Amino acid sequence: MISILGAGAFGTALAVAFARNGTPVSLWARDAVAAKTMQDTRQNTRLPNVNLPETVSVTADFASAIADVVLLAVPMQKLRGLLETHPELSGHTLVACCKGVELGTQLGPVAVIRDVLPDATPGILTGPSFASDIARGLPTALTLAIADDTAGKALQKNLTSPNIRIYRTADTVGAELGGALKNVIAIACGIAIGAGFGDSARAALMTRGYAEMQRMARALGAQPETLSGLSGFGDLTLTCSSEQSRNYRFGLSLGRGEDFDPSVTVEGAATARAADARAKSMDIDMPITAAVVAVLDGGLQIRDAMEMLLARPPKEE
Ligand SMILES: NC(=O)C1=CN([C@@H]2O[C@H](COP(=O)(O)OP(=O)(O)OC[C@H]3O[C@@H](n4cnc5c(N)ncnc54)[C@H](O)[C@@H]3O)[C@@H](O)[C@H]2O)C=CC1
Ligand SMILES: O=C(CO)COP(=O)(O)O
Image (cartoon, rainbow, N blue to C red; front, side, top):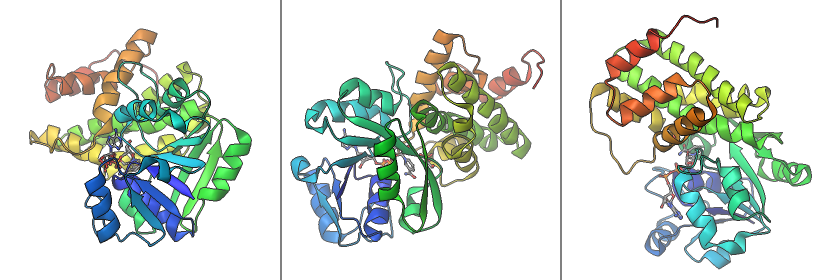
């Protein structure tokens, strides 16, 4: 059995995919009413038009939901709280499925797991994949990053299904950074398109955003090839170019001067602030991330942000 903690769009999509593969899945929702509704209706409003296979059991009873392998599908800023509330997760293989950098500590999900539960075996499942694509059984390739080789190989086999191909790496730092930082660049790209700057501007932001991601990854000891893989370049490409992405759509709304539903999970907003603070403390040049933070905090108009990026001193590429 696989347990998935967090019954949002992504946790539910993964549950559907693994159950289809023949693996029984226990999907834990913190809210008992929501869990019962999902269990009865076999649907989740966060993932419309998808039916839960019978082998997915939805529960709010934490103890009964826990298996040896636990996937953590809660938003990044909620991860520490979840782990601290459940020290019984210590000793398990804990695979983060969230993308982001924690405010305050500036740690990624694997580092947060290590920090709170040092006796767990931590990993991260990341890469280009929209929940609805996974749930519909469309072809997807993901990165599983886990330092423990034996656990990694077993898990890679366990989680692979006919439509989900999983690549493995031991570079957890690179994998968690790629997945986190691409959301910040996706917000920047959404802003650019929403403000009418055009596709060429978006391509420039994606490329120079990727350069920022690589700079931070290098400074934190990640392997460059991880950033050029699915968890970095792959997810950057997807998220910056599809309106299925909530981060990109949030940016679009900002660029158009429209409101955005605050209940929608937009990981890149908090991550931009955390990454910007880390970059400044380590003297890493990340001008697009800094511009996103300045726009989010209202200190910089979008047009001024673009002018500022264009007016930076000339450089070699
Ligand atoms: N939706 C997608 O296409 C993908 C999402 N992800 C990542 O998955 C993570 C979760 O995103 P989604 O499921 O899409 O968001 P969502 O907004 O659909 O669901 C989040 C779920 O987490 C639950 N939750 C919040 N705080 C909690 C807590 N303290 N304890 C237990 N449950 C809690 C909420 O009740 C909600 O069900 C994010 O980090 C996101 O970047 C990754 C790949 C694809
Ligand atoms: O991470 C994702 C795709 O890989 C989902 O992106 P959003 O959180 O922006 O919707």
